[in-house]
Amino acid sequence: MEPENAAKETALITGGGGYFGFRLGCALYQKGVDVILFDVVKPLQTVPEGMKFMQGDVCCLSEVEKALRDVICVFHIASYGMSGREQLNRKLIEDVNVKGTENVIQACKSMGVSSLVYTSTYNVIFGGQIIENGDESLPYLPLHLHPDHYSRTKSLAEMKVLEANGAELGNGKGVLRTCALRPAGIYGPGEQRHLPRIVSYIERGLFKFVYGDPLSLVEFVHVDNLVQAHILASEALKANKKHIAAGQAYFISDGRPVNNFEFFRPLVEGLGYKFPTCRLPLSLVYFFAFLTEVVHFLVGHVYNFQPLLTRTEVYKTGVTHYFSMEKARKELGYEPQQYSLNEVVEWFRSQGCGPKPRKYTVMHLVRDGGLLLLLIAVMAAWFPSAVTF
Ligand SMILES: NC(=O)c1ccc[n+]([C@@H]2O[C@H](COP(=O)([O-])OP(=O)(O)OC[C@H]3O[C@@H](n4cnc5c(N)ncnc54)[C@H](O)[C@@H]3O)[C@@H](O)[C@H]2O)c1
Image 1 (cartoon, rainbow, N blue to C red):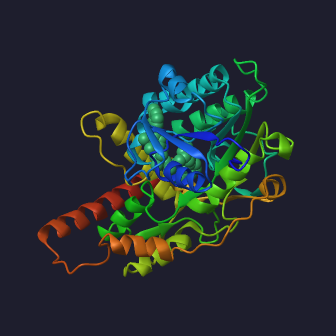
Image 2: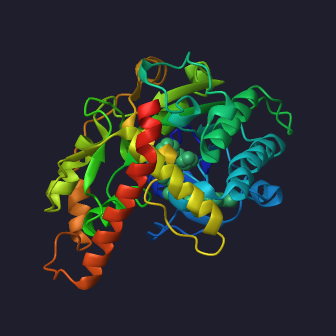
Protein backbone atom coordinates (compact mmCIF):
# COMPACT_ATOMS: atom_id res chain seq x y z
CA MET A 1 0.00 0.00 0.00
CA GLU A 2 1.46 3.36 -0.97
CA PRO A 3 -0.81 6.09 0.34
CA GLU A 4 1.82 8.82 -0.10
CA ASN A 5 1.08 8.73 -3.88
CA ALA A 6 -1.62 11.37 -4.19
CA ALA A 7 -5.12 10.11 -3.28
CA LYS A 8 -5.51 7.93 -0.19
CA GLU A 9 -6.03 4.27 -0.87
CA THR A 10 -8.72 2.23 0.81
CA ALA A 11 -8.08 -1.32 1.94
CA LEU A 12 -10.74 -3.70 3.18
CA ILE A 13 -9.94 -6.50 5.59
CA THR A 14 -12.36 -9.41 5.77
CA GLY A 15 -12.11 -10.92 9.23
CA GLY A 16 -10.91 -7.49 10.37
CA GLY A 17 -12.55 -8.04 13.73
CA GLY A 18 -10.26 -10.99 14.47
CA TYR A 19 -6.86 -11.00 16.10
CA PHE A 20 -4.65 -10.75 13.06
CA GLY A 21 -7.05 -8.74 10.88
CA PHE A 22 -7.41 -6.02 13.50
CA ARG A 23 -3.66 -5.79 14.02
CA LEU A 24 -3.11 -5.51 10.26
CA GLY A 25 -5.84 -2.85 10.04
CA CYS A 26 -4.13 -0.73 12.71
CA ALA A 27 -0.75 -1.04 11.00
CA LEU A 28 -2.17 -0.02 7.62
CA TYR A 29 -4.04 2.87 9.18
CA GLN A 30 -0.82 4.09 10.80
CA LYS A 31 0.74 4.07 7.34
CA GLY A 32 -1.99 6.43 6.15
CA VAL A 33 -4.26 3.94 4.41
CA ASP A 34 -8.04 4.19 4.81
CA VAL A 35 -9.11 0.94 6.42
CA ILE A 36 -12.43 -0.90 6.51
CA LEU A 37 -12.70 -3.83 8.90
CA PHE A 38 -15.35 -6.21 7.57
CA ASP A 39 -16.49 -8.94 9.94
CA VAL A 40 -19.55 -10.73 11.29
CA VAL A 41 -18.52 -9.73 14.79
CA LYS A 42 -17.16 -6.49 16.21
CA PRO A 43 -13.51 -6.45 17.28
CA LEU A 44 -12.86 -6.95 20.99
CA GLN A 45 -10.75 -3.78 20.99
CA THR A 46 -12.05 -0.27 20.43
CA VAL A 47 -11.77 0.64 16.76
CA PRO A 48 -9.45 3.68 16.53
CA GLU A 49 -11.09 6.83 15.28
CA GLY A 50 -10.69 7.10 11.53
CA MET A 51 -10.82 3.36 10.96
CA LYS A 52 -14.17 2.00 9.87
CA PHE A 53 -15.90 -1.19 11.04
CA MET A 54 -18.55 -2.68 8.76
CA GLN A 55 -20.60 -5.61 9.99
CA GLY A 56 -21.04 -8.13 7.20
CA ASP A 57 -20.78 -11.74 6.15
CA VAL A 58 -18.47 -13.01 3.40
CA CYS A 59 -21.10 -15.68 2.71
CA CYS A 60 -23.39 -12.94 1.38
CA LEU A 61 -22.19 -11.65 -2.00
CA SER A 62 -24.24 -8.46 -1.94
CA GLU A 63 -22.83 -7.49 1.47
CA VAL A 64 -19.27 -7.98 0.22
CA GLU A 65 -19.95 -6.04 -2.98
CA LYS A 66 -21.47 -3.17 -1.05
CA ALA A 67 -18.42 -3.02 1.22
CA LEU A 68 -15.97 -2.99 -1.70
CA ARG A 69 -17.09 0.28 -3.22
CA ASP A 70 -13.93 2.43 -3.83
CA VAL A 71 -11.64 -0.20 -2.34
CA ILE A 72 -8.24 -0.77 -4.00
CA CYS A 73 -6.97 -3.74 -2.07
CA VAL A 74 -8.66 -6.58 -0.18
CA PHE A 75 -6.94 -8.63 2.50
CA HIS A 76 -9.10 -11.73 2.76
CA ILE A 77 -8.51 -13.05 6.26
CA ALA A 78 -11.98 -14.18 7.41
CA SER A 79 -12.07 -17.89 8.06
CA TYR A 80 -13.78 -20.45 10.22
CA GLY A 81 -12.90 -23.78 11.80
CA MET A 82 -9.23 -23.46 12.64
CA SER A 83 -9.15 -24.97 16.11
CA GLY A 84 -11.08 -26.70 18.87
CA ARG A 85 -14.75 -27.58 18.41
CA GLU A 86 -15.07 -25.19 15.42
CA GLN A 87 -12.98 -27.75 13.51
CA LEU A 88 -15.90 -30.16 13.65
CA ASN A 89 -18.58 -27.91 12.09
CA ARG A 90 -18.13 -28.95 8.45
CA LYS A 91 -21.03 -26.97 6.97
CA LEU A 92 -20.01 -23.60 8.35
CA ILE A 93 -16.35 -24.26 7.55
CA GLU A 94 -17.24 -24.87 3.90
CA ASP A 95 -19.61 -21.92 3.69
CA VAL A 96 -17.16 -19.39 5.10
CA ASN A 97 -13.88 -20.69 3.70
CA VAL A 98 -14.94 -21.77 0.21
CA LYS A 99 -18.18 -19.97 -0.62
CA GLY A 100 -16.98 -16.87 1.24
CA THR A 101 -13.74 -16.82 -0.76
CA GLU A 102 -15.64 -17.29 -4.06
CA ASN A 103 -17.78 -14.30 -3.09
CA VAL A 104 -14.75 -12.17 -2.28
CA ILE A 105 -13.16 -13.01 -5.66
CA GLN A 106 -16.42 -12.36 -7.49
CA ALA A 107 -16.92 -9.06 -5.66
CA CYS A 108 -13.33 -7.94 -6.41
CA LYS A 109 -13.99 -8.56 -10.10
CA SER A 110 -17.39 -6.90 -10.24
CA MET A 111 -16.35 -3.90 -8.11
CA GLY A 112 -12.99 -3.35 -9.88
CA VAL A 113 -10.68 -4.13 -6.94
CA SER A 114 -7.19 -4.65 -8.34
CA SER A 115 -5.37 -6.45 -5.47
CA LEU A 116 -6.35 -9.41 -3.36
CA VAL A 117 -4.07 -10.85 -0.67
CA TYR A 118 -5.32 -14.12 0.83
CA THR A 119 -4.29 -15.38 4.26
CA SER A 120 -3.85 -19.10 3.77
CA THR A 121 -2.03 -21.57 6.04
CA TYR A 122 0.89 -24.03 6.17
CA ASN A 123 -1.78 -26.70 6.21
CA VAL A 124 -2.45 -26.53 2.49
CA ILE A 125 0.81 -28.50 2.12
CA PHE A 126 1.22 -30.18 5.49
CA GLY A 127 -0.97 -33.09 6.47
CA GLY A 128 1.07 -34.92 9.09
CA GLN A 129 4.08 -35.85 6.91
CA ILE A 130 7.59 -34.74 7.97
CA ILE A 131 8.69 -31.63 6.03
CA GLU A 132 12.13 -30.14 6.64
CA ASN A 133 12.91 -26.78 5.06
CA GLY A 134 10.18 -27.25 2.45
CA ASP A 135 9.52 -24.59 -0.14
CA GLU A 136 6.75 -23.32 -2.38
CA SER A 137 7.52 -25.88 -5.09
CA LEU A 138 5.93 -28.58 -2.90
CA PRO A 139 2.56 -29.74 -4.25
CA TYR A 140 -0.70 -29.21 -2.39
CA LEU A 141 -1.61 -32.06 -0.07
CA PRO A 142 -4.20 -34.10 -2.02
CA LEU A 143 -7.58 -32.92 -0.74
CA HIS A 144 -8.73 -36.35 0.44
CA LEU A 145 -5.67 -36.69 2.70
CA HIS A 146 -6.61 -33.73 4.91
CA PRO A 147 -7.91 -35.17 8.19
CA ASP A 148 -9.73 -31.91 8.90
CA HIS A 149 -12.15 -29.90 6.81
CA TYR A 150 -10.64 -26.52 7.72
CA SER A 151 -7.31 -27.34 6.02
CA ARG A 152 -9.09 -28.85 3.01
CA THR A 153 -11.27 -25.78 2.54
CA LYS A 154 -8.35 -23.38 3.07
CA SER A 155 -6.53 -25.29 0.34
CA LEU A 156 -9.49 -25.04 -2.03
CA ALA A 157 -9.82 -21.33 -1.26
CA GLU A 158 -6.13 -20.67 -1.88
CA MET A 159 -6.33 -22.44 -5.26
CA LYS A 160 -9.34 -20.33 -6.23
CA VAL A 161 -7.60 -17.11 -5.21
CA LEU A 162 -4.46 -17.92 -7.19
CA GLU A 163 -6.49 -19.07 -10.22
CA ALA A 164 -8.27 -15.71 -10.17
CA ASN A 165 -4.99 -13.89 -10.76
CA GLY A 166 -5.16 -12.07 -14.08
CA ALA A 167 -8.97 -12.06 -14.31
CA GLU A 168 -10.50 -9.06 -16.11
CA LEU A 169 -12.07 -6.46 -13.83
CA GLY A 170 -15.72 -5.68 -14.45
CA ASN A 171 -15.13 -1.95 -14.76
CA GLY A 172 -12.66 -2.48 -17.61
CA LYS A 173 -9.84 -1.02 -15.51
CA GLY A 174 -7.28 -3.79 -15.88
CA VAL A 175 -6.97 -7.11 -14.14
CA LEU A 176 -7.14 -8.57 -10.66
CA ARG A 177 -3.76 -9.48 -9.09
CA THR A 178 -3.79 -12.05 -6.31
CA CYS A 179 -1.37 -13.78 -4.00
CA ALA A 180 -1.54 -16.03 -0.93
CA LEU A 181 0.47 -16.01 2.29
CA ARG A 182 0.76 -19.25 4.25
CA PRO A 183 1.44 -18.44 7.90
CA ALA A 184 2.67 -20.77 10.61
CA GLY A 185 0.86 -20.64 13.99
CA ILE A 186 0.26 -17.01 14.96
CA TYR A 187 1.24 -15.69 18.41
CA GLY A 188 1.47 -12.32 20.10
CA PRO A 189 0.00 -10.42 23.05
CA GLY A 190 -3.77 -10.59 23.14
CA GLU A 191 -4.00 -13.56 20.76
CA GLN A 192 -7.40 -15.16 21.34
CA ARG A 193 -7.42 -18.46 19.52
CA HIS A 194 -4.63 -20.73 20.76
CA LEU A 195 -2.91 -19.07 23.70
CA PRO A 196 -5.92 -18.61 26.04
CA ARG A 197 -6.85 -22.25 25.48
CA ILE A 198 -3.30 -23.36 26.29
CA VAL A 199 -3.18 -21.10 29.36
CA SER A 200 -6.55 -22.39 30.53
CA TYR A 201 -5.25 -25.97 30.31
CA ILE A 202 -2.16 -24.93 32.27
CA GLU A 203 -4.25 -23.16 34.90
CA ARG A 204 -6.72 -26.04 35.24
CA GLY A 205 -3.84 -28.45 35.78
CA LEU A 206 -4.54 -30.33 32.54
CA PHE A 207 -1.11 -29.61 31.02
CA LYS A 208 0.46 -32.64 32.65
CA PHE A 209 2.36 -34.13 29.74
CA VAL A 210 4.08 -33.34 26.46
CA TYR A 211 4.19 -35.74 23.53
CA GLY A 212 6.10 -36.74 20.43
CA ASP A 213 9.80 -36.63 19.60
CA PRO A 214 11.61 -33.91 21.60
CA LEU A 215 13.63 -33.18 18.46
CA SER A 216 10.55 -32.51 16.31
CA LEU A 217 10.46 -28.96 14.94
CA VAL A 218 7.58 -26.68 14.02
CA GLU A 219 7.30 -22.94 13.41
CA PHE A 220 5.40 -19.91 14.64
CA VAL A 221 4.96 -16.39 13.39
CA HIS A 222 4.67 -13.28 15.52
CA VAL A 223 1.60 -11.28 14.57
CA ASP A 224 3.70 -8.24 13.63
CA ASN A 225 5.93 -10.26 11.32
CA LEU A 226 2.78 -11.49 9.61
CA VAL A 227 1.51 -7.90 9.36
CA GLN A 228 4.80 -6.91 7.72
CA ALA A 229 4.51 -9.80 5.24
CA HIS A 230 0.94 -8.82 4.24
CA ILE A 231 1.84 -5.19 3.65
CA LEU A 232 4.86 -6.23 1.57
CA ALA A 233 2.73 -8.70 -0.40
CA SER A 234 0.15 -6.03 -1.26
CA GLU A 235 2.98 -3.78 -2.47
CA ALA A 236 4.48 -6.60 -4.51
CA LEU A 237 1.22 -6.92 -6.46
CA LYS A 238 1.72 -3.44 -7.91
CA ALA A 239 3.23 -2.34 -11.21
CA ASN A 240 6.21 -0.61 -9.57
CA LYS A 241 7.18 -4.00 -8.12
CA LYS A 242 6.51 -5.61 -11.51
CA HIS A 243 3.57 -7.50 -9.99
CA ILE A 244 6.17 -9.96 -8.73
CA ALA A 245 3.82 -11.55 -6.19
CA ALA A 246 0.94 -11.97 -8.65
CA GLY A 247 -0.27 -15.57 -8.74
CA GLN A 248 2.26 -16.59 -6.05
CA ALA A 249 2.11 -18.25 -2.65
CA TYR A 250 4.62 -17.63 0.18
CA PHE A 251 5.30 -19.41 3.45
CA ILE A 252 5.56 -16.94 6.33
CA SER A 253 7.06 -17.63 9.76
CA ASP A 254 9.59 -16.18 12.21
CA GLY A 255 12.13 -18.36 10.38
CA ARG A 256 13.16 -20.15 13.60
CA PRO A 257 12.10 -23.81 13.75
CA VAL A 258 11.58 -24.91 17.36
CA ASN A 259 10.11 -27.81 19.30
CA ASN A 260 6.44 -27.01 19.90
CA PHE A 261 6.51 -27.57 23.66
CA GLU A 262 9.86 -25.85 24.15
CA PHE A 263 8.38 -22.82 22.39
CA PHE A 264 5.74 -22.62 25.13
CA ARG A 265 8.12 -23.33 28.03
CA PRO A 266 8.73 -19.57 28.73
CA LEU A 267 4.95 -19.07 28.89
CA VAL A 268 4.38 -21.96 31.32
CA GLU A 269 7.33 -21.07 33.54
CA GLY A 270 6.85 -17.31 33.14
CA LEU A 271 3.35 -17.68 34.57
CA GLY A 272 4.82 -19.58 37.52
CA TYR A 273 3.85 -23.17 36.59
CA LYS A 274 5.99 -26.29 36.39
CA PHE A 275 6.78 -27.56 32.91
CA PRO A 276 5.65 -31.21 32.59
CA THR A 277 8.30 -33.91 32.60
CA CYS A 278 6.06 -36.76 31.39
CA ARG A 279 6.31 -37.45 27.63
CA LEU A 280 3.70 -39.62 25.85
CA PRO A 281 4.02 -41.31 22.43
CA LEU A 282 2.54 -39.24 19.62
CA SER A 283 0.45 -42.18 18.38
CA LEU A 284 -1.20 -42.57 21.79
CA VAL A 285 -2.21 -38.90 21.90
CA TYR A 286 -3.38 -39.09 18.28
CA PHE A 287 -5.53 -42.08 19.17
CA PHE A 288 -6.96 -40.20 22.15
CA ALA A 289 -7.76 -37.23 19.88
CA PHE A 290 -9.48 -39.59 17.44
CA LEU A 291 -11.65 -41.00 20.25
CA THR A 292 -12.50 -37.44 21.37
CA GLU A 293 -13.61 -36.60 17.84
CA VAL A 294 -15.78 -39.71 17.70
CA VAL A 295 -17.44 -38.75 20.99
CA HIS A 296 -17.92 -35.19 19.75
CA PHE A 297 -19.47 -36.53 16.55
CA LEU A 298 -21.92 -38.61 18.60
CA VAL A 299 -22.91 -36.08 21.26
CA GLY A 300 -21.74 -32.74 19.81
CA HIS A 301 -25.25 -31.69 18.73
CA VAL A 302 -26.47 -32.10 22.32
CA TYR A 303 -23.34 -31.08 24.19
CA ASN A 304 -20.90 -29.10 22.02
CA PHE A 305 -17.89 -29.57 24.33
CA GLN A 306 -14.38 -28.28 23.63
CA PRO A 307 -12.19 -31.30 22.78
CA LEU A 308 -8.89 -31.34 24.66
CA LEU A 309 -7.14 -31.92 21.32
CA THR A 310 -8.13 -32.84 17.77
CA ARG A 311 -6.07 -35.12 15.49
CA THR A 312 -5.00 -32.17 13.37
CA GLU A 313 -3.81 -30.32 16.44
CA VAL A 314 -1.78 -33.36 17.50
CA TYR A 315 0.23 -33.63 14.32
CA LYS A 316 0.51 -29.85 13.86
CA THR A 317 2.22 -29.70 17.23
CA GLY A 318 4.10 -33.01 17.25
CA VAL A 319 5.33 -33.71 13.70
CA THR A 320 8.29 -31.85 12.18
CA HIS A 321 7.31 -29.37 9.52
CA TYR A 322 9.11 -26.16 8.73
CA PHE A 323 9.64 -24.16 5.56
CA SER A 324 12.23 -21.92 3.94
CA MET A 325 11.54 -18.15 3.99
CA GLU A 326 13.80 -17.67 0.96
CA LYS A 327 11.09 -16.87 -1.57
CA ALA A 328 9.39 -14.33 0.73
CA ARG A 329 12.75 -12.75 1.52
CA LYS A 330 13.81 -12.51 -2.11
CA GLU A 331 10.54 -11.49 -3.76
CA LEU A 332 8.75 -9.55 -1.00
CA GLY A 333 11.73 -8.25 0.98
CA TYR A 334 10.35 -10.02 4.09
CA GLU A 335 12.75 -9.86 7.07
CA PRO A 336 11.23 -11.39 10.21
CA GLN A 337 12.07 -9.60 13.45
CA GLN A 338 12.96 -11.60 16.56
CA TYR A 339 10.36 -11.69 19.31
CA SER A 340 10.18 -13.57 22.58
CA LEU A 341 7.18 -14.76 24.57
CA ASN A 342 7.86 -12.15 27.30
CA GLU A 343 5.19 -9.75 26.08
CA VAL A 344 2.71 -12.66 25.90
CA VAL A 345 3.54 -13.64 29.49
CA GLU A 346 3.10 -10.00 30.56
CA TRP A 347 -0.23 -9.86 28.77
CA PHE A 348 -1.56 -12.94 30.58
CA ARG A 349 -0.22 -11.63 33.89
CA SER A 350 -2.10 -8.37 33.26
CA GLN A 351 -5.26 -10.50 32.88
CA GLY A 352 -4.67 -12.00 36.32
CA CYS A 353 -3.26 -15.35 35.16
CA GLY A 354 -0.82 -17.26 37.33
CA PRO A 355 -1.01 -19.77 40.16
CA LYS A 356 -3.47 -18.94 42.93
CA PRO A 357 -3.62 -20.64 46.32
CA ARG A 358 -6.11 -23.46 45.90
CA LYS A 359 -7.33 -26.25 48.11
CA TYR A 360 -7.30 -29.76 46.71
CA THR A 361 -10.98 -30.65 46.91
CA VAL A 362 -12.95 -33.86 46.37
CA MET A 363 -13.88 -32.50 42.95
CA HIS A 364 -10.18 -32.35 42.01
CA LEU A 365 -9.73 -35.89 43.28
CA VAL A 366 -12.67 -37.11 41.17
CA ARG A 367 -11.40 -35.24 38.09
CA ASP A 368 -7.80 -36.48 38.42
CA GLY A 369 -9.04 -40.02 39.11
CA GLY A 370 -11.31 -39.81 36.05
CA LEU A 371 -8.46 -38.57 33.88
CA LEU A 372 -6.22 -41.37 35.08
CA LEU A 373 -8.87 -43.97 34.33
CA LEU A 374 -9.44 -42.44 30.90
CA LEU A 375 -5.71 -42.54 30.17
CA ILE A 376 -5.52 -46.19 31.22
CA ALA A 377 -8.54 -47.04 29.04
CA VAL A 378 -7.06 -45.22 26.03
CA MET A 379 -3.69 -46.93 26.56
CA ALA A 380 -5.38 -50.32 26.85
CA ALA A 381 -7.19 -49.73 23.55
CA TRP A 382 -4.16 -48.19 21.82
CA PHE A 383 -1.48 -50.65 22.96
CA PRO A 384 -2.45 -53.71 20.85
CA SER A 385 -2.70 -51.64 17.65
CA ALA A 386 0.63 -49.92 18.39
CA VAL A 387 2.33 -53.30 18.93
CA THR A 388 0.81 -54.73 15.75
CA PHE A 389 1.92 -51.64 13.83
N1 LIG B 1 -4.15 -18.30 14.14
C1 LIG B 1 -3.26 -19.08 13.54
O1 LIG B 1 -2.41 -19.69 14.18
C2 LIG B 1 -3.28 -19.20 12.04
C3 LIG B 1 -2.33 -20.00 11.39
C4 LIG B 1 -2.34 -20.08 10.00
C5 LIG B 1 -3.28 -19.38 9.28
N2 LIG B 1 -4.21 -18.62 9.93
C6 LIG B 1 -5.16 -17.85 9.15
O2 LIG B 1 -5.00 -16.50 9.52
C7 LIG B 1 -6.24 -15.84 9.47
C8 LIG B 1 -6.49 -15.06 10.75
O3 LIG B 1 -6.42 -15.89 11.85
P1 LIG B 1 -6.82 -15.35 13.30
O4 LIG B 1 -6.10 -16.21 14.27
O5 LIG B 1 -6.67 -13.89 13.37
O6 LIG B 1 -8.34 -15.79 13.31
P2 LIG B 1 -9.59 -15.12 14.00
O7 LIG B 1 -10.55 -16.20 14.25
O8 LIG B 1 -9.16 -14.23 15.13
O9 LIG B 1 -10.14 -14.19 12.83
C9 LIG B 1 -11.00 -14.63 11.85
C10 LIG B 1 -12.12 -13.61 11.75
O10 LIG B 1 -12.96 -13.97 10.67
C11 LIG B 1 -14.26 -13.60 11.04
N3 LIG B 1 -15.26 -14.32 10.27
C12 LIG B 1 -15.63 -15.61 10.41
N4 LIG B 1 -16.64 -15.89 9.57
C13 LIG B 1 -16.89 -14.75 8.88
C14 LIG B 1 -17.82 -14.41 7.88
N5 LIG B 1 -18.71 -15.32 7.43
N6 LIG B 1 -17.82 -13.16 7.38
C15 LIG B 1 -16.96 -12.23 7.86
N7 LIG B 1 -16.04 -12.49 8.82
C16 LIG B 1 -16.02 -13.73 9.33
C17 LIG B 1 -14.36 -13.97 12.51
O11 LIG B 1 -15.44 -13.30 13.14
C18 LIG B 1 -13.00 -13.53 13.01
O12 LIG B 1 -13.05 -12.21 13.51
C19 LIG B 1 -7.29 -16.87 9.13
O13 LIG B 1 -7.56 -16.82 7.76
C20 LIG B 1 -6.61 -18.18 9.45
O14 LIG B 1 -7.11 -19.21 8.62
C21 LIG B 1 -4.22 -18.51 11.28
